[in-house]
Image (tube, rainbow, N blue to C red):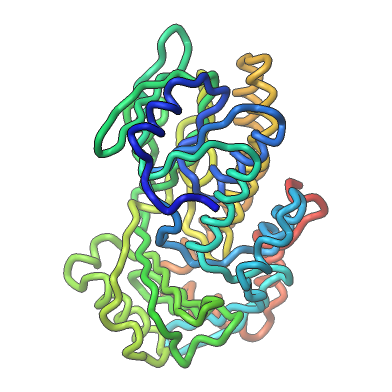
Length: 393
């Protein structure tokens, strides 16, 4: 089992004394899966994360059918059952007193993000990956074309120069901050993410169902976790947070939507994210490949976020492993192409849905359409979240 303690000075110095084929920064789903898949190809991999696992995460805790199918394709079909994953059946949407039910493509799951991330990290370690947790990583630049990485803990700092780097440190990571070529382009009206977990589930939240309240200033989704806790994840307009605060804005959105309020959400400790909708000018250059949320993100709705991370972690592995033996700019071009093919269309659909939800009139029209004839909405849901023949199709 992975150690639940931060990296020691001895471990850091030991890792720095070894040559590494690949260093992966960020041990969320994208990073952990990429590490596992690359290591299984006989490549030496160092996986670094600033957190110590298990750790809390701002996330809706839903994994779409497409994401579950991807895990099964790489031999991780027992991970979700072992964590008590709950089948994801439908989403109940509510706004301004109206409600509608959207059928979620069969095969999705609800799972604790703390438990899932720790399990995927363990799978990577079992595959031969070395893990440094409680360790901060920064891209310090390039020397003679080789990426330089500064690794630091509270007591030591070292510099290493691996053959290749995979950046998977998510929305809140700062690994690429020193590289202007990877500076994110943030959408002007991008919302921020807010999340918290209640120790007991609210009465209105049925097991296996996403309950989503949609208001003028954002939306709030709740799901019941396998252990009975309630996960609350929201996307909110930044300008509304200051006057109301996270908890006040959550209550306001739920009230606007006409959902029953429960004191179970009062007093939650909220975590936040930077602006959600963003993209990078490029997702690979000069022996550095970017995956998961770090490569670009759009407000998700029914488990797309974790799925996008899993798919990108799987897809980047053969490219990076091959480039260790024979690096060329063709590997960079290949990842740019594959990343766009995998995710661009589905992110565009989510962006369009987000735009629709911002407009009160469009929300009313859309909700009425879903309530009377959900065929179109279910078709969109199947495209974005449904399983494919071959997880990477």
